[in-house]
Image (cartoon, rainbow, N blue to C red; front, side, top):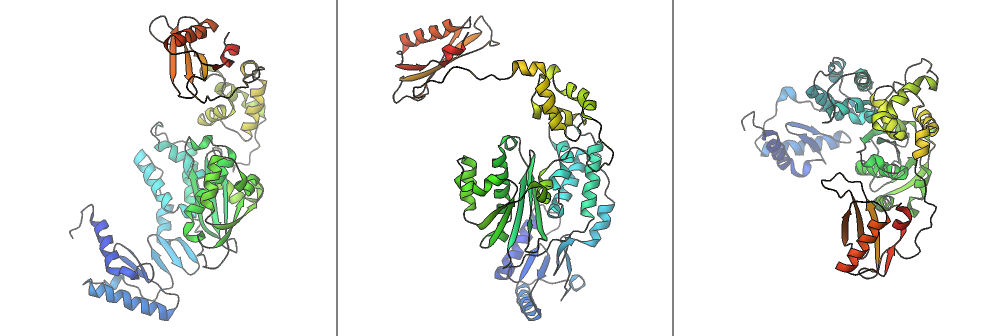
Length: 447
């Protein structure tokens, strides 16, 4: 096969898997032209080596003696140094990591994230560290390399240069998985019986997942972690350590997502142990996206010193936003501070505009009739919408929905009030027929 073809590696890998056959994964591993033969002891290793060499000879392949190592107790394979103690980054990669330069373009940033992602099993706070750089790769963001990206870059280099070792799990030992969730991500670590790390994991939540409730995020972290480490956890007993006490009783939950994930987890044999957040530090830091430099030892200024930043983010053209939206605007302006959520919550409660316009519960009781009819037009619901920015004089409309058939009728009108709803029902009676019962809450809320 000539060099340079785009699909050459795929066909070469397929050919090697066909040649090695049943020896693959039981006596050896193969990645394109790199073959590793293993054994638990010397006799098993020599037998496996003889079988693999026989398959290679039968296929008419040749080996390069200068690139062949036999009987090694430690090897460098695909960027990893693997030995009896575990795996870690190859020493020959450390110099290249030390000489990494800060990205100057979007392409360089993506290349850096791809490199870090390859060794993410070693990085204890992967989501935390890479988020400032990851947000530059999103379509809505411009490539502006700032202080947060510089700090993230230096933290990634430090983590990779730590030469952390991930141990090999023994077949019969009891494993432990620690998981946690934050507003922005989930994370965790799988440990052996001696609580030494086997692998770390972290995942950034999508905008939709960030709107989930706390118990949904925490349960998803457990589900995602056990699924990711399924090859280690399936068929053995293990312990899940969580800092959300409600998940201890997740089999009794009425939440649809928790029920679905609980059923998926039922194939595993594990116990859930509640761990306070202060004792679950590894999983906790994996799940968080730290937007501030918490390593600074300088004393933080009093909360009143940040009120100007709060006033810039809360009010103005954007309106009087809630706590989370206000905090996001402050973070986007790179003006966050420790304890920001607590201070923003207190200031919003003191804001006179927010207190006047906050949601007030209706004092009127709910309807006592069933909300869904048993036949067409038995129960209908009505409400008004508007003002609408439409051409013409019709700025309001009444929307009437039959609860049984879901038939929807909209009647435009120039005015807003009870008369428009009355007009809608008159027209409905003329074209269809008047229902036996309708939801009268619109009458109480329409001025």
